[in-house]
Image 1 (cartoon, rainbow, N blue to C red):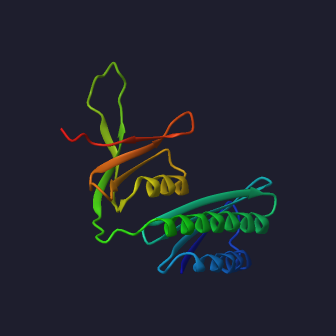
Image 2: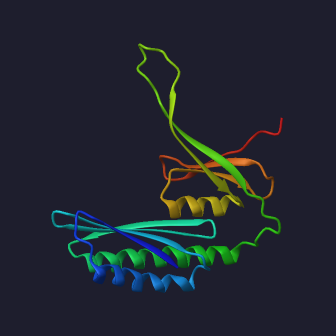
Length: 181
């Protein structure tokens, strides 16, 4: 497991870094190697915030906890990650894995719109390429929940079409599928 620890607004501490690494060792039983973990430890006045992002085998999980003590924040965030991974592992057991996995590359762009009076074309200010693996709608909802996102673009494992799942304001989910016309 590769762990990167970043300290924000505080002095780097080998004791905290070691404690985080020791706690993150518990998640190895839920995910196969290679695991990339990023730990962000932040102090803002009296708030101690621990954020963890874990990436392994195409799965990304994020969690954050805030307490008045950094050690208890680390304990809480690792417990939260462990619960999410346990839930993810149980859901994976319910689904049959697809035999052929074809990944697609997708480019995400952030566009900056100029004022309406100027009426110019929007300018792309950031672009990101990532691969999307085929998954079922249930897996896409689970991945979206693990990432704490409001929408997710994915390839449907059955049809191999690119779909979008999104969280509605009423708490339910919406699915955008291409038409077969």
